[in-house]
Amino acid sequence: MKLMSIAHLFLALLAAPLLLGVLNRCKAVFAGRKGQPLCQLYFDVWKLLRKGAVYSRTTTWLVAAGPVIGLAVVLTGLVLTPAGQTPALIRFSGDLILLAYVLGLMRFFTVLAALDTGSSFEGMGASREVFYAALAEPAFLTGLAALSCLAGEFSMSALSGTASLQTWSASGPVYLLVLAAWFVVMLAENARVPFDDPNTHLELTMIHEVMVLDHGGPDFAVIQYAASLKLWIYGSLLVGMMFPFPSGSPVLASLVFAGGMVLVAVLIGVLESVTARLRIVRTPELLLGAFALSLVALLLAVSAGGAHVG
Image 1 (spheres, helix red, strand yellow):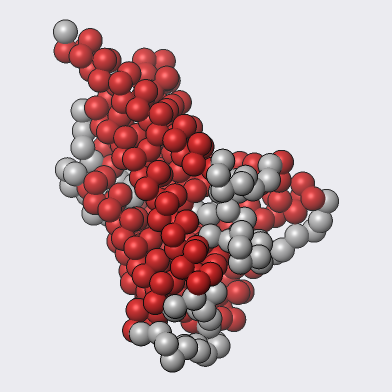
Image 2 (cartoon, one colour):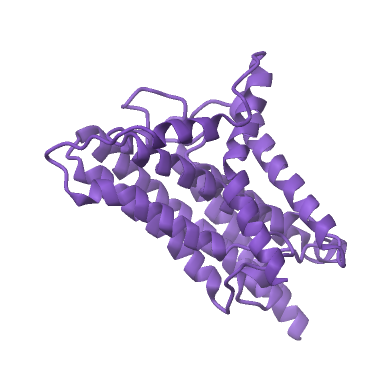
């Protein structure tokens, strides 16, 4: 099982940029275009790594350290994330809380680097990022509490890959509510439509992209790669919760997991193709709705646990 965890870790490191390729290709199909190559992000990262980095005289070491620390933090989150029935490389009771804090720490250093530039535009993007985080994190943590209460476990690896026809028939509403809430959180945390448009170039409407305007070369390559790993982590959590994995066949379970990750990328691409970015005054309603869904799921899980004990 340890070897499978290591194999899935290397799969994430190699295939995470491919998710964005699938997503962009799906959007291109809806728009009637050929679209970018599936491996476009690999080409972009390689090109950026061969360039130099330019820093303003008003910045400090935080601008250079922010992307590197962010990548280190998201790699830490990756070793805490299970892949379906395959447990995380590092797992212990309470690791789900550490995972939530690790993802928040990545955002913290990205915001610090943006504020360190002294740019008013990047400061605006940083404030919006923190505002969304304050609404998204309660929905994510409440969903974790609901699943933990339902399963009686406090480890991410124990919660992932446990979905089956029996669990869905017994606790389907809880899974559906948490699944819907986490899908909204994933869109917000990864700067996707309807919260943000990763393809926009208008500073007044950007959130995540405006925070990295002053980064270039290897720094921007690290940011792009870390963003793909972050999307992989959230996709892994969704796939591990909603797909029933075959038991006794690690290879077949891995294929189901890979197919689920592709499906998540396709769903995001379809959503971005048929909807538009919402006004910033409307997007908090989505995150508050996600928190409400997680809260209802937690109440249902608590009542189900109480009925089971009784």
